[in-house]
Length: 535
Image (cartoon, rainbow, N blue to C red; front, side):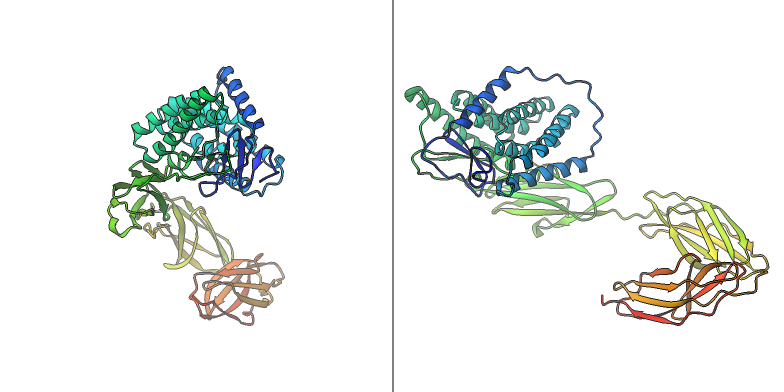
């Protein structure tokens, strides 16, 4: 990023006075220069003064905030991507970020007004890095102050600790160690109250630096270079979940040493959620899917509890020692990822029986069916139609109509309908209803369908297409045969069919026959064959 943003060093860092801010995560740190940077330090100090002089903005009537949790999560993920992209040096111009940052700041403000603190805290993790990279100090400080107010209103101790830690570290960058120590002291007190071991470690480093700088400022009139590395926002990943980290390095005579964000003798445990069901995991400072990582002292037992959401069941942990019980007592001896899997709960309740079935003969070879929608505890996914007590076809669960074509003139047909759901539960069949087709007057059959093509699409599907037939009145339908057995009938305006749920590596032979409104049928087409793909 060097040369892309004013005051930016390489690898996603920004120089501020005797320090450099790193936003590329805990794996990369600042490069050191012999001379301290002063312009950014002055700008940061001015932003702190301006933010302190401004009264808190009045919150007008809260407009309806319609963004769903999924939409907000998507925006937060995009913000995190921008931080990583900018830190990697892939954004060549500052203008590429300005519009995105303004949009994210607007989202942050609306989350704050709507009282959606957990999402506000997640968004601040990424905004922290973006605003630092683009030197928007006033926006950064205003956002942290707003976050602190919201955390206090919500009683969210970890959020208050995070905001105090960030504000204290920024004040240290601006050459205000006394003010920094007050914020860092409060952050340390809050972290001790919630047992945040890793957060206390990072805060103690910064607090020690602030106190030393205050001492030197009193003796020498200004802070001097100290050859150490202080972690500014390791708590981004510790107290608030994953996100781009910001590291603070003090530079002076060209030498430095590094420390780690993970306390000695501790390991990071990360929880992930998997499966088609939904649920959550809590325990030991975790509240996944909101907060899914925690630092645990070596040898400590972490008690994790999995809770399935309505309509889901918990099926097990990835760690064998946990088994399938909802509570996992895990002794932590190394960094690890624990996956909790949830599946949809088994549905055993069938839909209600379809009612109001009517059968109306439209012409000599078509009868139209209609019925009243069934209900289900989850959802009706289909209706099975029976003709003369034999299964005819299945239609979508959103449909309550069916056109039965290709019938014989002057013939009576009996129908019933059955509802099914996604779990395979079936309702009883509806009451029977009967209709009789009228006599035919047209004696001319349609022409034979031509150019039948069968194409294997997958291991379970073959697609058919053919050229339209003609008739002296109108072609009303095409009857599709598979291996010599009638498969289905499609409308006379349709010249294709997708045959699904087939066996893999199997050869199938098809023919198509055209019918008209009088029940006249063409000869079957020339056969076409295809073989499904391997399984």
